[in-house]
Image (cartoon, rainbow, N blue to C red; front, side, top):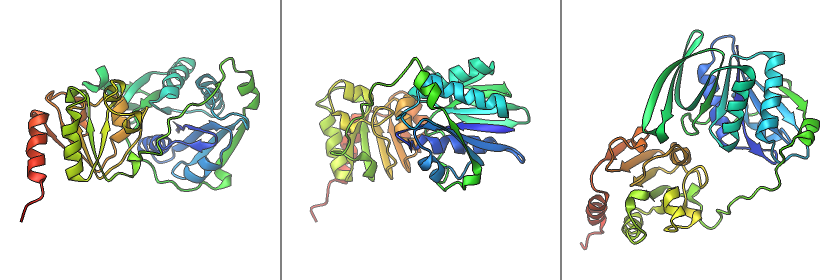
Length: 321
């Protein structure tokens, strides 16, 4: 069986989520199966240098394309599957992946499971755990093969980045279909995170909507200072203007892997979990015991977060002696 791991990138560079998709595909492979990474972009050098955990790489190349839009990506992948066959397609949950997964499933007439957190394989079927209602509900389902899975970033640790030998790479020229596509990217607008590099932080205290208001963030700042941590926020906090965009963690912010990640009043939407799910230690405080953040937390508390911040800050105060 061929298992395709859809990868992503721009300007010839691959995103870290690509290695997670290869790891997810590898977890489903059995003896005799092939894990094939599918990449579409302007150049394959970065993919060839990192995708060694896959058995092969299919690189669909359009030299003038910084990114390949979802419709063209899906059509090229389906053409490859029609020619070579496949049993499973793994797609990342992303802005592009949302369209790719649904388009591939529709074109192939295969079942699609979205927001996947866990996958197991039993013969010709899969046992899948997927998120519903922003992660508040986890659904167990059995899916016959062949199938398409849209996997949440952070659900799998990244595969080791090692190079692929040239004989394991198949290159396809897609310059013509990219040029003929009715949907074309006009520009890529990326935030500048150079002033606040949360990726380098060993400890992060992140506040969510549960913090209540902007003034209350000062309590979290004090705690962060005592811990030697950076202060960060979830998207609702940033959207309210309580913290700058540079301090947002999540899909549309920064992706972090600190030694300590303390989530205060963070519900844990999939977009947020994508940005911090691989942290070494996650401590979550939320009054809702069903908050999705507890699905990834190593330690959790449902107490009042203000009481916890006050008590913890008091305990962390340096001694006078």
